[in-house]
Amino acid sequence: MPACAHITKERDLPSSVYLSPIVKAYVGIPLLMPEVRISPRNHLKPQLTAHEAERTSNGDYEEIDYHTFEAVDYDRLMSWKAGDGRISVGVREMTQQNARVDTVDATLPRGRSAVVDRMNFKLVRAS
Image (cartoon, rainbow, N blue to C red):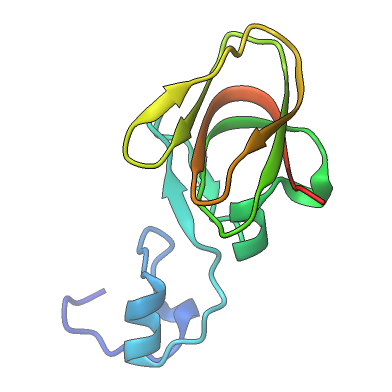
């Protein structure tokens, strides 16, 4: 494909090309392609939707290779199965949690994010 080719549809792009949502909106390409992020281990993962960025899917445990659950304006409950991974919680400074012990419903206060690395983890909204 020439460097100056005119792209009008996403299918006109080679599969190796990644366009951010901002670029897609600017050039008028419909947002059909799932977003991709790269974990520290260079694994390609689909970008999570807004609600999945705040909690795990369906409020169930998930095997998570690496993910940051962004801060929200309500408390959440974290649970995890003991493992060799890591869980860190905080705002600017992250506090390591004890990932080697099964934990159920530990509070993640509003305004704090959680970084999960290689854990069977669950995050839900506190009631």
